[in-house]
Image (cartoon, rainbow, N blue to C red; front, side, top):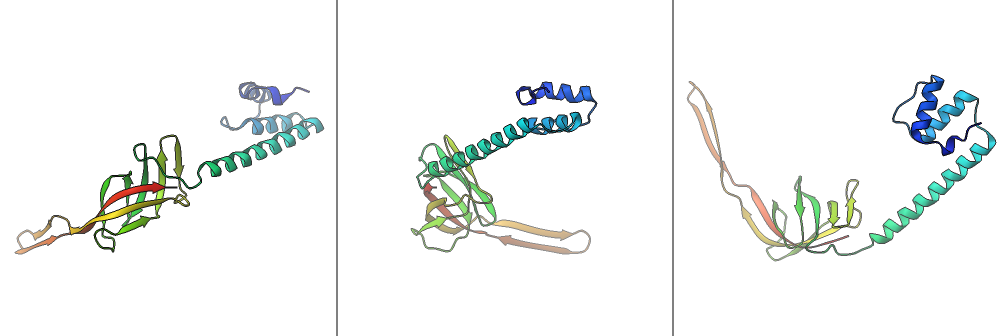
Length: 185
């Protein structure tokens, strides 16, 4: 019996096409091996043991990798020059970095107050990228309220031709200007 574990994916695909088996061309190597073994008469005891040990090693490696990622992303500040975050506030998303000034929908607070924005969707700090599902756990963007004001007037004009219907209205949207103090994860 051939040692399918040592064969490349291309060789496995060639073997399956030679046997006349229909399969997904984008299948993983393990799936291709299962197709071949099913077609040629089942698994041998040795290959089953090798598969089980390989799978156990893979699971152990993935757990170690997850632990190292968690340790690496323990509470730390994102460097001011290199990193930025994507936050959600007022139903919109904003890209912010330390020291930047951003206008967002009205947030309750007085000028000079410090607020924490905990709805952080993603954090990028040069080498590391953390994308939340939907938010990054433990990530906080600290900002200071710089201004509470109204935006410029937007004119809304409605008219129906030949009916004498004309309405002119204006709208000034409230906003809060924030200066981002820092991003911490």
